[in-house]
Amino acid sequence: MADEGQQHEGTSDEAPKKKGKGLFRIVKAIAFISVIVVVQVVVASMLAPSAKDTEKLARELVAASSGKSAAEHEENPKAAPAEATNEQELHEVELGTYNVTRFNPGTNTTLAVDFEVYGTVLAEDAPEFEKRFEKSKNRIREQITMTMHGAEATDLTDAGLGLIKRQILEKTNRAMGQPLLKEVLFSKFNFVER
Image 1 (tube, helix red, strand yellow):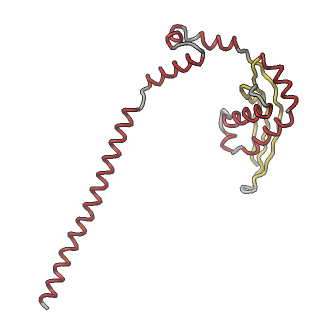
Image 2 (cartoon, helix red, strand yellow; image 1 turned 90 degrees about the horizontal axis):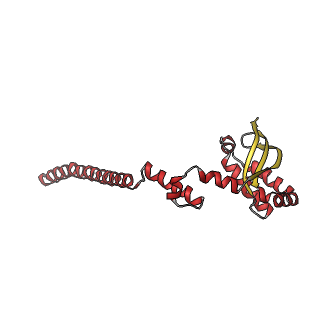
Image 3 (cartoon, one colour; image 1 turned 180 degrees about the horizontal axis):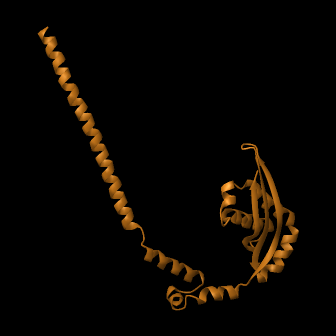
């Protein structure tokens, strides 16, 4: 019986030691993970470019897109955009007036979108655009309508309508078979959810 008492005392002493070891392991793991996170943050902050580096890179990209070296662009930064505009004059074209209504059975609401779409083409491409637009007018109307049917409410509330404009630009150029359209513009855009 004395031996049994000693056995129970031995196991009761081991239990707090095991709990202490388990807690110590958790603390070590948390400390190890914290050190790794801090090291990653420090390395990321060292590798991230500064505002000056970003601005310099932007100037180099603008200069490269206008066909000049960065040094030439630095000497006369305002001349590049004006020259590009003069070389490639844009012409506005009407893509149509639309009224798209769609019902959402999930929310039991109807969305009505009224808009006028215009595009820009290079002045030298305007006759070719008109010819191709007339040949594929119905396909283009369908693509624009389907783009609006597929648009999410967040896309319609975007101030610049960037995603919708890119989708219409891509689908219109694909329907014409040649990328003549350079930009899509909305002169009127209203939508109401009822």
